Amino acid sequence: MKKIIIVGGGFTGLTMAYLLSKYGNKVILIESEDDMGGLAGTFKVGGQKLEKFYHHWFTNDVHIMKLINDLGLNHKVRIRETRTGMYYSNNFYKLSKPLDLLRFTPLSFFGRLRLGLLALKARTVTNWRKLESVSAKEWLMKMAGEEVYKIVWEPLLRGKFGKFESKISAVWMWNKLKLRGSSRGKKGEEQLAYFEGGFADLITFLTGAIIENNGEIVKNTEVSGILVNSSQSANGVIAGDQKFFSDYVVLTTPLPIAAKILKEQVSEKYFLSLNKIDYLSNVCIVLELDRSLSDTYWLNVNDPNFPFVAVIEHTNFESKKLYNDRHIIYLSKYLLEDEFLYKASEEDIMQYTTKHLKEMFPEFKKSWIIKKTIWKGRYSQPIVVKEYSKLIPSYETEIKNIFLNTMAQIYPEDRGTNYAVRQGYDISEMIQHRIQSSEN
Image (cartoon, rainbow, N blue to C red):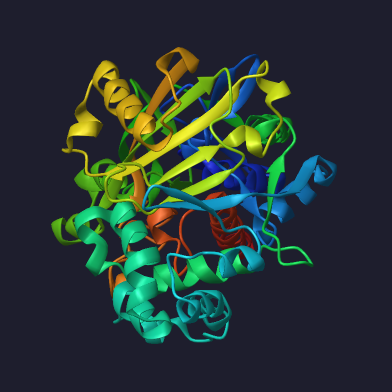
């Protein structure tokens, strides 16, 4: 048995704490906030816990399903058909089923065919490394043509990545298309999955399993440094005003935070290498309304005048009865931390938000809002540029038995709870194998 400290209580950290404690190790999970789950953390709406930042799973998200199966909770997974759409040129278009695509009149008939074939073409790519030196723009133009790119993909890339639009790797876009195109029912309808009781209930089951395995969870405690022994190997962490000793340490925090934690114990070259990947922040406005905005769950916004990349009506996915009959709307904006909306006060954000909602939904009134909650995530999206794989640090650091296992290392897939869990499994098995080898 070894003592292992895991820093960060997102799904990677939780998965690792669960598995490594299950293997019989003494695990201490240290989280800087009171709420577990990281970007999948939750808050209460009408007595029910809801994700701060919108979350769901695709039906082919096998890693999270494996974890749920390990916990014996398969019966709590709900798979539902969803309604998706697009807002373009002051009009709403349904895009849930193949036939909807044929009715998408902003594109020519030939353009509609090319858009429909794009997801199929993406699934034929067998070697993503060939796409690393190509931008998403270049790849999409080649695969689907200028018309499809200008109307469908350029607004979405610009809405998501802003000034980085032309630098985003084709790998990122390829994976998005491949993943979403595979999450469909027999008739081609899009299907998504959710956990009964929300992600909060899954987190509760996970933390309960960790404690049952004699693991320890320390909340509201920020890790500021690493302890290293005379052999230049892991000896623990400094957290708050305490020292926690261990044989292994895993940092699951964003890379810039991991770099600060490691700074005093690693070379300058290594420290700088951990800061090569840039991140976008996110502002997510959660509105509780007394009525619905539309019958669409996920509405992509392809209008450059509307500042949010999507309007997500959660209660077109989960029943409003769970939230005291309130209609839940997410408005999401990715941006740099020095941009207006990220720095703005709640009052200014709401004034900005309601103004634009009124333009999209002319009948909307402020009086519809029962409650609003604004969440900000500083490290919400690694900016996946061309040749991104060359920027990703190894899971092993300069210090023996100290590991990195972060969102920015998920590749070629994009970040999300499914792949956070996958990394939790992979690095847990690597560490456990090392423990067993050292004891033999």
